[in-house]
Length: 177
Image 1 (cartoon, rainbow, N blue to C red):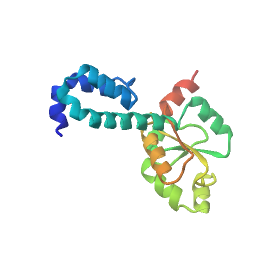
Image 2 (image 1 turned 60 degrees about the vertical axis):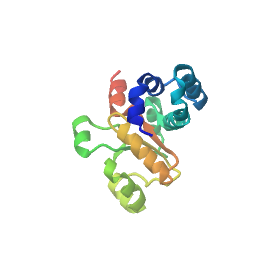
Image 3 (image 1 turned 135 degrees about the vertical axis):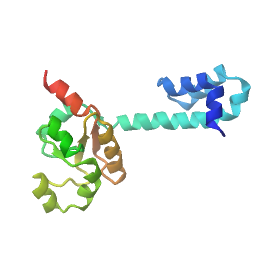
């Protein structure tokens, strides 16, 4: 199927599906398509609705592991929660970091958490190395890079990995109040 050609022919339908986030279930997508599209698109309905449903489910699932400013404030007081800033050292040098967090650049997170011994981790970061059950909050400037790392670490078995979706920008704005 040539989606580019289909996109040109049925641009309004694609706009409805992919730009209006309120269409969340396959049934809703299917019903919307039936109402606004001619019969020629019917063979594509199932493919489009499956793609859209998986897209929305992934978005919803990822939000389940997002934390906000108040969660990070609480985490700072809890020695059992580790906050990891995944920005580069230069970036942190320009802006600062969330108090109590440690810096492990995005490209080093996986290697550091998996391959460092407990002693190496403690010596480098002055914190206990997290186990796969430890709650870890990842942050960056705006929550995108930390979201990628959070998902990656969950796939590697760190099921209590969370993403501070507001990142440093949110922290800086709220802590100045």
